Length: 314
Image (tube, rainbow, N blue to C red):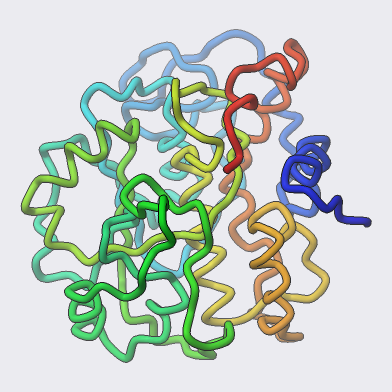
């Protein structure tokens, strides 16, 4: 597959089939379900799952894929985030044993946990740097330092426009002992997330930033660029990066081309491992509902006419 040279041309090529190479189960059953169905717990009318109780409707019980994650995930929702439009529930349904959702300001006490916040603070470290740490204390110490100088005009607090540079080549940790047990995601608009981050309970948690990835989310946020990801996309990206740096990348896995910029992809060969636990789509089913909704919307609307996909790439 030839890679177009310009960023715009490359993204246009990816947009033709944005889930190419991902290992996502057949979701045609979702298209066959008619109408809405009562939630098995609260009885409210739902389409595929209840976004209040986080359980699937009875017709999908035992049918949906189950995704097992290497760490626990907590999602902190802004109280004004519309449940029916949020993708946070996708993770809670598809990885029910590993994902919990809380509505801010009602959040757990994280002071005794080895936890990181996925948020582009001024002191955030990359996942390659995270995995390289020997223990949680070293992560905390790293977040007290400014780890690199950003290019003029690039502010990490408004999300990365360029990939974080590492002092050494990308490597695989080859360890089952991760320095963290949980990652936290904020489910809100960018402006709302900055408000949540000001909370001292959240602000003291060390931050990690994911690599730049172009979103396929159809929900438009005025003034935001296309690298502002939907919550489920951000979780998927984080888990892929965590897995790559811990256990490597299966050379046959093609979904990787949709997850990174071309500059980062050029370094991914360093991550290739022909081993059973190397990444080969283990978390791709987190996009099970996301892909269905994307396909449904694109069956009715032309991609190029949707405002969400007209946002700037750089």
